Every structure is written in C-alpha cells, then in structure tokens.
Amino acid sequence: MTTSSSSSSLELGAPTAADRRFSIRVPCTSSNIGPGFDVVGLSLSLYLTLQVRISNHSTSTSSSTSSTSNQHPILHYTGIGSDDAPLDPYKNLITRCALYVLRANGKGPLFQPGISIHVHNEIPFGRGLGSSGAAVVAGIILGDALGGLRLSRDRLLDHALMIERHPDNVTAALMGGFVGSYLLDLSKEERAKVDVPLSEVLPAWPDDASAHWGPNPNGPPTGIGHYIRFGWAQEIKVIAIIPDFEVSTALARSALPDTYSKADLIFNLQRLAVLTTALARSPPDAYLIFQAMQDRVHQPYRKELIPGLPRILSSVTPSTHPGLLGICLSGAGPTILALATHNLESICETIGKEFEKEGISARKEVLCVTSEGAVVQEEH
Ligand SMILES: Nc1ncnc2c1ncn2[C@@H]1O[C@H](COP(=O)(O)OP(=O)(O)OP(=O)(O)O)[C@@H](O)[C@H]1O
Ligand SMILES: N[C@@H](CCO)C(=O)O
Image 1 (cartoon, rainbow, N blue to C red):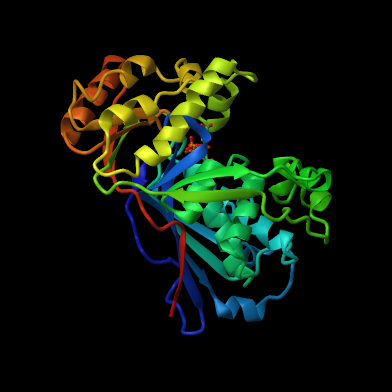
Image 2: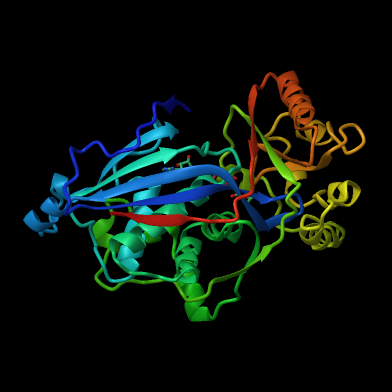
C-alpha cells in the first residue's frame, strides 16, 4: 500500500469552458460496532474523492460505440492504494459500478467518450474501513451523474445493494452518520434479480461483455434496503488503530459459521438494542456502552485472522483507561475501533503496543463521525 503525492486536478490538459466537471466525495465507514453485524454503520472522516471531467470536444467528435481508446474513461489515482487499484475502467470497481448503473437504466452499454476521472483515496483497502463500500457508492453516484439519471438516494441504495450485498457500509457511506439498516424480504421475482451472480451485475470488459450485456437492462428491485439514522453524542470520539496488513472481507466472512446458538443471538440482540440509544445519550455511560459493544457473532470467529485479537480487545477498559467507552473490530477487521471521550493518546498507545507484541505495526487515526454521506458537486 503506497501513498503517492496528491494532486487536485485532472491531468488531461487545460479544461475548456464547455467541459463538464463535477466531484464526488464519499466517507469511509466502520460497520458492526460490536454486536451489530451487518446492521449498523458509522461514516467517518477519511474520504474517497473523484474529480470527473467530461471533455465536450471528445463527446462531439466521437459518437461511435466501438472500443476506441478515447471511448474509455481515463483513470488516474493518487493517495492510498494508488499502486494497487486497476486503471482499466472495465476492471476498476468504481467505474464498473458506474457502468452497472448506466446499463441498468438503459444507458450504455459503454461509457460516453471524453471522460477522465481523478481518484484521490484516503481509505486503506481491506482494513475494515469500508473501502469497497465507498468505491461502490462512488461508482453508483458516478453512473447516476454520467447518465443524468437523477436517481433518489433510496434508489441509489438499491443499486449499491445489488453489488455490496450487506447493507451496513454502503448505507452509512451514502446516507452519512450512525445508521442502522435491514434488507427487505423480496418476492420470488425480485429475489431472482438480486440473486444474479455478481459477475453478471459487474461484467468485466471485453471478455464476457457480449454474453451478459444485452440491450434490456435488469435493474434492481425497488426498496431493497431500509435504514434509519441514530443519534451520536457529540462527546464520543472515534479512534481507529489500523494495522499494516489486509484482511479481505470475503475471507473474514468465510470464517463465520452458518448457524448460531440461541444464546449467542440473544446476547447480541440485547446489546445492540441498548447500544444504538446509549451512543446518542449525553453524557455517555461508559459502563453501559462497554458492555453493549460485546459481540458473539463475528469477532470470536475472526480471531485466527487477526493475531492477538481477544487480548487486544481486552487491553483497554473503562477501568484501566478512564474515558474509554468501548472497543471492537471495525467491519471485517483488522482495524480496531475504540470509542472514547478523552484519554485518546493513552488508549491508542496501549492498543498499538498490543499489536507490536504480535510483530505488527499499526497507525492511529482520530476520526470524526460525519453527519453527511456521499456528496456530489457540479463545478462551474
Ligand atoms: N478506491 C478504490 N478503487 C478501486 N477499488 C477499490 C477501492 N477501494 C476498494 N477497492 C477494492 O475493494 C477491495 C477491498 O474490499 P474489502 O471488502 O475486502 O475490504 P474493505 O471494504 O476495505 O473492508 P470492510 O468491508 O471490512 O470495511 C480492494 O482490494 C479493492 O479491490
Ligand atoms: N458487516 C460486514 C462488514 C464488512 O464489509 C462484515 O463484518 O463482514
């Protein structure tokens, strides 16, 4: 994972007055917050930002749908992951999601010519901070903007949920704040649309394009997911301790069992019911929150993937570190999230030392909860 120098403008020559330019900014997210596996998400202040330019000159000079080079959007990355993200727009997650939205709404099947996109990324990949959720949301919004579709936020969410099929990260990234969500029970016909394999929702180009890219778009059913925003007490600060290794969400999900005991489900449901309100209360009740952030559904099963996890999660408590409210795995990990009102430095130091004992270095970020989700802004 490398960080390259940042630049704020697209590198395709000077824009003309006729060019359309807009930006999309999506926050990172932490999901689960202990017991809320696949249910709650929190948007936080690290961002994925796209600056998009559509050259009017290219649009007017090329209307062909053949795969010529100026038909393909030009991607340029700076920031975290810039050496790892594919620059081929038919392989890159953001642009594939955009293409899905275009196709699902009767636009496409290719991008219009003359598009260039500068992606600046602050969200580390595969660390449990919702990098893929942010990329999906950015791509969905990109598709909406490119197609001039003006889809509602709820409809954008339907599209995002066809791609990232657990709602916690994408809902928080799109809507912003501390958010709880569920997926709706769908009819048999709707279910069939949602059960389309991801490879067909997001076909790569050109190999399987002809196989799956028919003229009839197969858009998502309406209202796949519902959400509600909870309160968040102003005093609660968020610390992310981000170790220097990745755990893919797919791997972390494959570690989970298919069935749970009644006792473990009740354990989590009881805590989640208390937690969502406890985090909105001022002043926060450390004892209540610490207990309410315990989990028996995903963290115990992910310990093999994150060296020292049980010890790390018990390394700080409200008694050992006054100011601490709770500690959990962020998303699928390996980032550790600690909520606290004060004493942040000492909490970070202790968790960092626990990682060090495992030979793992970690960086720390003190983040703000963002009330705003994804934002798109036309530039004039
Ligand atoms: N900005 C981006 N541009 C292109 N691809 C991205 C971007 N961000 C994430 N990805 C893709 O998503 C992968 C990471 O997704 P994954 O679901 O494993 O982890 P995560 O989303 O960071 O963590 P979590 O889901 O636990 O919060 C990356 O390896 C990359 O393929
Ligand atoms: N709720 C998901 C979030 C990761 O994207 C999980 O923990 O697997």
